[in-house]
Amino acid sequence: MNGAANKMQAQIATVKRKVVATQNNTQTLQSRALSLEGTQADLNLKTADIESHVETT
Image 1 (cartoon, rainbow, N blue to C red):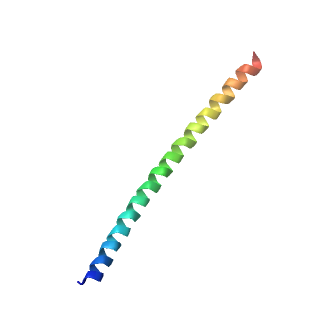
Image 2: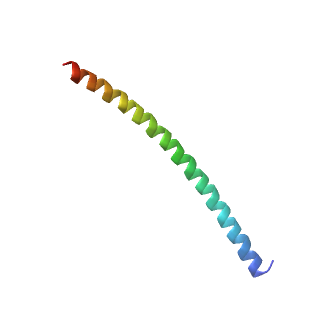
Image 3: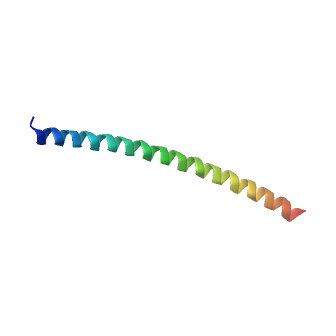
């Protein structure tokens, strides 16, 4: 291969690595978002419980 072809192959390899990294980051963010949704739901339940105790005392 000539220099231009080598450079193109290197650029393709770099893009492929970046795509994989982006996919991994996306999966991580989706997992964290789900975790935060669960935490939010738990906090909402606890808040409602506290509010019900405050209203009855």
